Length: 178
Image 1 (cartoon, rainbow, N blue to C red):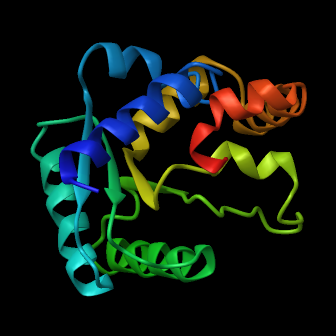
Image 2: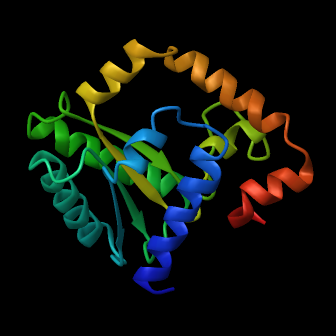
C-alpha cells in the first residue's frame, strides 16, 4: 500500500468511524479546521518508527498541528508488541520531561482492552485500519475534558454505541476489520 493510499485510509477511518460515530467528541472541530496532522510512516522497524514519532512530536511542539495521527503502514507488529512499543515511547517522553506535555493513545486493528476478550465489541473503539498513535497535547485534553463529559462517561457511551450497531452497520463503520 502506498503512503498516499495509507493516508487516505486513515482519513476515511477518522471521518467514517471516529467522527461518524462520534467516538471522540473532540475530533470533529480540529478535523474540520485542518488541525489534525495525519502522517503515515513506512518504517518497518521500531527504531525507524521511533524517529517518525519524534518528527511528529516536533511538528506539534512547533505549533504546526494541534494533534497528530501517526500511522505505520509497514510496521508488522501484533497488538501486544505495538502496545509495548507505545510504552517505550511513553518512557522516552518521561525521560525527556515531556510526559506532562504529550499524551499518546494507541489504535490497532487487533486492539484489546485489558480484561476483555478478543471478540468484545468494546475493543472496536480503538481498532483502526493499521497500527497508529494519536499524539495529543495534555493541556488540550484537560480543556476538552473539563468542557464536556468525563472520560469514563465517553468510554461507556462509545461501548453502548458500538454494541447497539447491527451487523451491517458494524461492517459499514468498521469496514477495515471485515
